[in-house]
Length: 190
Image 1 (spheres, rainbow, N blue to C red):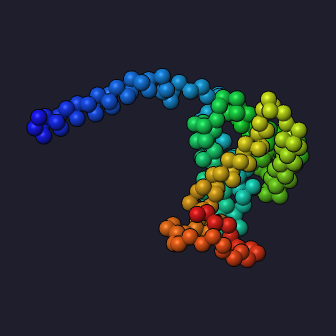
Image 2 (cartoon, rainbow, N blue to C red):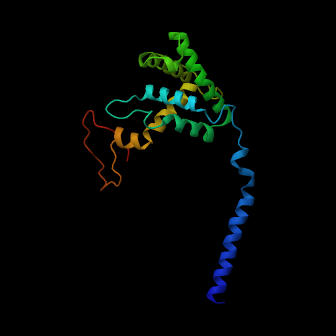
Image 3 (cartoon, one colour):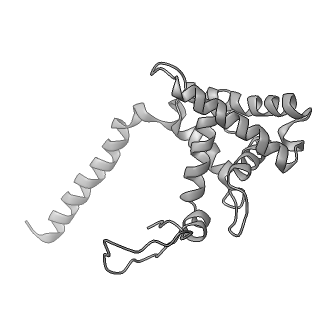
């Protein structure tokens, strides 16, 4: 067999594999996944989530969660990665935060001052800690736990969080097993 025949047979084999691969994946189309009503989030919902995240990780001497676009990250994670039950809990959580702010301060979360937002989220954080302490394995997740976890994951895995809030070296040098720590040093992202 000459090289030309061998290459054409390999191309046919690989082409068949790629074409055949789509047949095997037909049962796993992204459109088949069930999503809760209200997904993907509206621009208003993403702005709301940005404000919640910014209250959890505010701008200080480093950019906050809003600069890292954590609201858009939450949209992607909830839409693409959460099961339908947790999607519904998360969506209902948006309304629950707004209702908690209305109950505590007489206005919605988006109209609240930073101090009022912090009070609401601090109360919800205490509520979710108490809930999780007594939670049985079959109990659903608490909506604020989901939001807080996604805020931290979204922020610290973003470029802003990894390079400005944490210490980051793109290509680390040699391995050093023991690095002195001084109080106030940033944690390492790498």
